Image (cartoon, rainbow, N blue to C red; front, side, top):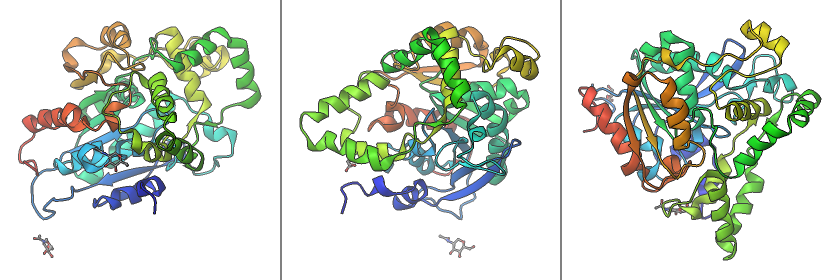
Length: 389
Ligand SMILES: *[C@@H]1O[C@H](CO)[C@@H](O)[C@H](O)[C@H]1NC(C)=O
Ligand SMILES: *[C@@H]1O[C@H](CO)[C@@H](O)[C@H](O)[C@H]1NC(C)=O
C-alpha cells in the first residue's frame, strides 16, 4: 500500500475519495474541441434537500496545469473542497490540450494541428461555452471566477474580448495575477531570454516542428523521482530549490512530503504555441494577441502587428491576491502593466498574501485562512440565503 493513494487516482476518483459528489460534463467549442467540465454540486455535509442558495463558482487553472491543481490537498487546505463545503456549486474547467480535454471532433492529439492554439483560442473558444454550460447547470445567470496564474489572464481577457460576458461574471478572484509575465524571476526567465535573444532558432523550431505537446503528465516518471525528495536526506534541499527556482522562495507551508501527489496530477500538458505566446508577451511587456507572422496577422487581425487586449472593456469587480515572493505574477507586472490598463473603478480589492510563492495559493497548507476564507467572506456579504453559514 502506498503512502499517497491520491498519487494513483484520476481527478474524478480523487474527488470521490474525499467523499464529495462529482459530475463531468462535455463542452464542445466552436472550433471542435471537447472539454471536460467537472462539477462538485455539494459539500461533504450539505443538506441536499434544502432550498438554500449555492452560488456558482468556476475555477480556471494555470499554464501546464488542469482542474486537478485545485484538488490536490486534503479538504482543510484544498481550494475546490473548501468552496464546496462553504456552500458553493463548484465548477472546474480543463482547457484544451490538458489531461481531460484531449479530444476534438476530427483532430487527434497526435496531429500537429490539434496543438495549434495560443491563449487567444482559450479566450475566444474555450471560455464562452464553458461559462454558459456552468451557468445552465447551476440554474443561475452568472458565476464567480477564481483564476490562478494564466487562469487570471484568461479571466481578464474573456470579458475584454467578449464584453457580453461582463454580465455573466459576478466577480473575478485573481490569485497570482498574470499580466504580461514580463518581470518574471528564476528559471522561467531563461526561457523568456532565449525567446528574445535567439529568435532565429525559435522561428526555425516553429517552422520545422509546428506546434506540439509539451509539459506532459508523466506521473510514472515524476512520481518516483519526487519520492526521492523524501527518501534521500540530501535530496530534500534539491527539491526545495527546484520549487524555489521555478515559483519563488518556498514557504514552510508547502507540504513537500505530498510532492508525489502534486507531480502525479501536474503538469498536465500544453502546446508549444502557448509557451511562445507567453514568451512573446513577456518580452514585449504587453498583453496582446499571438504574433504569428505579418501575413497571417493580416488575415487574423487585419493588421501586421498583433493587437493588444483592451482591458478597459472589463466591467467586472476584481479582487486580486498577490505577494512579493511570487516570481511569476510579480508586483512589477501588476503595477506597471495590469493596473495601467484596468479601469480603476473595477478594482475592488488587492489582498497581499505575505510570503506566498506562485503555487502556494493552490497548495499551501494555510490557503484556507489566507485566500479562500477571505473570498467566501466577500461573497457572503453580497449573496442572501447561502447554504452553509
Ligand atoms: C431528500 O429528498 C428525497 C426525495 O425527495 C428523500 O427521499 C430524502 O429522504 C430526503 N432527505 C433528507 C435528508 O431529507
Ligand atoms: C502532508 O502530506 C502528507 C502526505 O500526503 C499527508 O499525509 C499529510 O496529511 C499532509 N499534511 C497536511 C497538513 O496537509
